[in-house]
Picture (cartoon, rainbow, N blue to C red):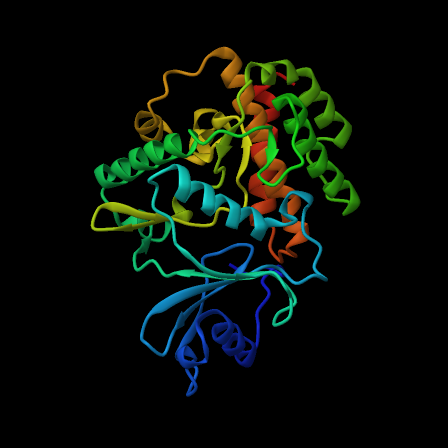
Length: 326
């Protein structure tokens, strides 16, 4: 996926990064077949690198400093590293091992880290080739994995590295306001006015008060961030959007309020969640509204040349506003 946030580096810089992480004896010196870019990501650039020993690793590089990112994306690589630490320390959910991280900007103009390469298929890439029973089994597995991630407790609501809020209402309203401020700064056109969106969220904010315990929320755990092999989920990847909040905000629940995001029934079975209450459905609709805003506004920040995502997300926003009775 193409985006101006992808901070591609010349081959010699990549060699220097490898030497810093693994030692000069691991640097491949001939040809360029030792490195290839992984194309599935939407935000950071990622390379699969073959060390001289034959081991494959992944190098992930944060966006260049002169490219403006959305407010919630600032410091995303630090968030991912913290998320990986938390997942490894508190759960049995399979994630890549971090081999080396460099935030000095001495070799590259941005943060970067190396992690183990997962030799498996991306679930989103192969999903259409699978029988429905296998798709359901994977979705159930994602539900169970998501529930385990949500057992990680937080001290406050908000970013993993802070600053946080004492209440989920305050944290979520800040998340929405940051998005709207991003959109206004770039003059992004919404199908509903910015003031109207603020009023809609405020009118339903009481539903957020039901959430009193901050929990780790992966948020971006969709099939595109799930690696599978031989019928098993062998790793989940891309953790830069994690935060402490309401588990109901997890991506797997989006389909409960919009069929455009797919059928959520298998995910919910795997998660072990009962039917959503009236208040939970209101919260989930607010979260779908938040997701739609991201998908609309990021098209400007990432300089999309087509309008497919923008148009689709605008329709989702209209749909969600209608469900909220506005």
